[in-house]
Image (cartoon, rainbow, N blue to C red; front, side, top):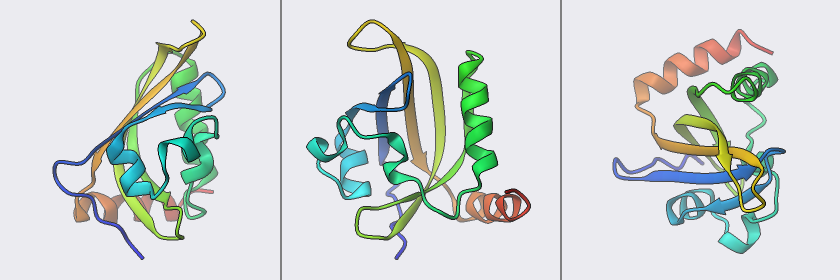
Length: 126
């Protein structure tokens, strides 16, 4: 079942350099269906939807590891087996609690037209 974000939803998470969640805001927890305690210490891939092509995440990781900002559309999974679409911006080299670099991801609602285009593109990828 699709969870459609409100126009005012703004999902934020911070990870360490390996993608382990260090912080998640209330909107992220509410939309994904997890408590903060369930997310902290888990890989961000906990919300990865199987429909997402591996090539999209390879592009994301290649981009942020080269110290560039990545932007794109992502279909994520909820804890209860549903899904939601977001437009994500991932920022590299955010200082983490241990002083090492990590990543910050900010997500907003994706429009139906944006989702349609992303679905068409992702069908061509592996």
